[in-house]
Amino acid sequence: MKQSKWIVLGLLVMLLSASVALAAETYVRKVDNFIFLVDTSGSMGGTYMYSQNAKIADAVNILEGINKAIPELGYLGGLSTVAPAQSIADVAGYERGTYGAAIAKIPVKLGNRSTPIGDGLNALEPALRTLVGRTAVILVSDGQENESTAPVKVAKELADKYGVCFHVIGFADPINGGQKTLDGIAAINPACTVAVTGQQMQDQAALEKFVRDVFYDVTGAEVDGDDDQDGVLNSKDKCPDTPRDLAVDADGCPIPVKMKLKVNFDFDKADVKPMYHQELADFAEFAKQYPGVDIEISGHTDGKGTPAYNMKLSQRRANSVREYLIQKFGMKAARLSAVGYGLTQPVADNNTDEGRAENRRIEAVLKGVYQKR
Image 1 (cartoon, rainbow, N blue to C red):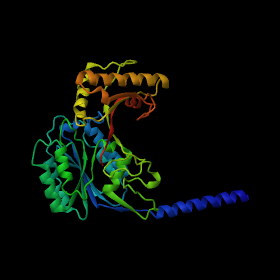
Image 2 (cartoon, rainbow, N blue to C red):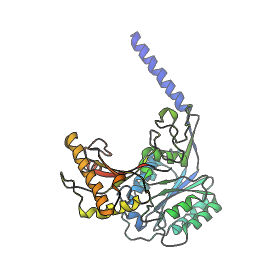
Image 3 (cartoon, helix red, strand yellow):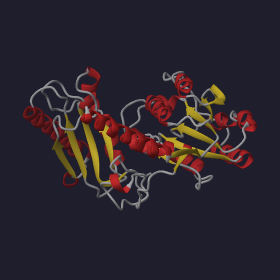
Image 4 (cartoon, rainbow, N blue to C red):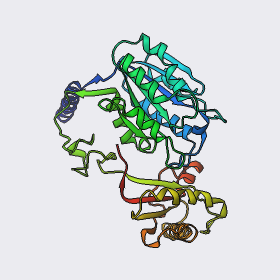
């Protein structure tokens, strides 16, 4: 009986300590209002070279992740699109479930729509005119403006007139362009702007950091420094002293620039099919931006089969892609390595067909090149 009493007392002490710790930490809004402006033009239906998914599909997934991470602090929130320039959810009190339902209405079958980003920005003005306090507009786009007024000019006018801070989640790539437009919008007020790429936002830690940087501060938390200011506390940071311009993972370590190459193989085969020639041609063109940088071609398998068998199979496939890049596109052999990782680095659930398909992949990792914040 006495032992039970001490156990209960211990549990009460633990609960009280946890309550005190939680009470000491307070979330404070950085903004009062926000509007996500999502580019639904035809180019967003194209493949994003860093994931091999449609850009709009990645964008919707990212928005769903952001919605789960935003604390409900009394924001007013809205959701609009470009092409056509329309409101999916008018600006109203933010509630996670309602906003999630609005995100689900974003069209993902886009067809050949033009890209009037400037018109989409202009269409926000009636809503901006009614808002009081600090307002964030988060543009989700590949920046491929091909119609309407200059988007950077429009964004600058809205920022000056209504005190809007623009943030950017960019899906531009070096082959199809668009980065100049996104950079121009991000440069309007760099002191408040957070600009990230769709590739960076695939990392959960980077996504959560974006939400905190844009939406809220934490005050009164227990003291635990962040000396390199990467968003990961010292007690959890496995890579202290990371340069401040680099994006980091949940452990505080720089995230290497990595591309998924959409090259599939027949069962137990490792030869590269002609149908993947353009995929590898695009990568070879991309790699020209990094002359002299060593690149690892890594092979990965799903969880079926023995570890030893999968290790050998993934190595053969990585070797094949490496040789193809050398023979077909003249890439220097000395800068290309091939490494098979077998089933040791899954990125999805091996218990489902979809997850196993994700795990069967070829990736290109640029050595010593890391994602920027």
